[in-house]
Image 1 (tube, one colour):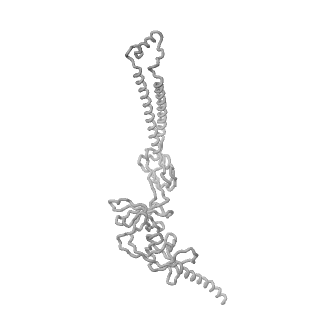
Image 2 (spheres, one colour):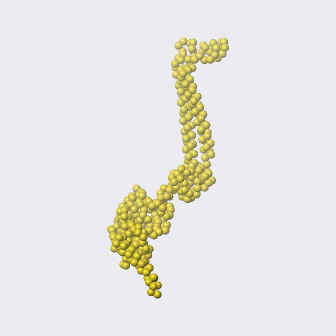
Image 3 (cartoon, helix red, strand yellow):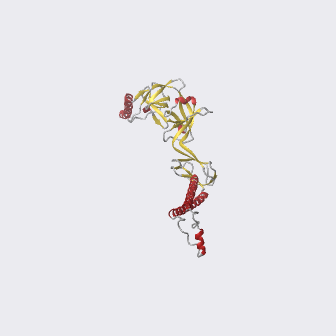
Length: 380
């Protein structure tokens, strides 16, 4: 019987010895005391999660919708044709404009040839071909440009007039080409306006038309957004703005899973709303956070006007993640570590964070290390 008892007590004794030994080593190397730091109060404001970029694609030309790239939630790269409006009439006008351009180019070529002929082979210095026989030919010679009437003809003036006439025809032909090219460019621009193109990589957030619908210029057709990165948009009262600066990190909470996370001030509107007296502030969220655009979120804004109070501060290395909630290992009076949930505030420097609830100054906690440890029970 004594042998059986010894075999039972030996593993228990070894387990207690290992736990006690690890606790002593942890106290020697990884135990710190929760300190305090003076901080002002905070105000929790509600806001909405928004995508990093979002555009509403509206119709630029009237017509009937003939194609839509996909459904809500589908992803597309930049440059994809998302919506197409019927363009049969514009294609017909384009064909007519191209034909008009070819005609104008031919007229230009002919006018240039006639001008060059007049320039190098003037009409006034070349006799006309024989117009008749006998007496008709004789009369042609007598009365053609008064050649045989002394003092009444000036071939230089006539040649200048012929050159001006041919030059005017060249200029007119060139103008008709320019007009045809301008008309063709206008039609091509209208053809481009029949297509809604993705301006960046993103997803369809909202589809506002269907194939077969008739749209007018300015009518919204689709909401397209870049949702790989998300933001929180909050209307901050003007009195709290002195506590915010671009780039600072503040605590935030997402409604999905009650996720606590840090958000960085990304954009502050330059003016306040004259009715609500609030300023629009956007906070960047880390990549891969749960949830999506349109969901509810809360942000803790420092209130510099509130009285200063002492709050617990701990190093980031002491915080463990259990799901979406932060926790720390707290040593009890027997030096046994127990897990405890906390609520974190703003970061101080690169390695320290404020604790809003869950810890008291003077408590002892463990800093995380890479060494294997026994399972730690939750504090009750």
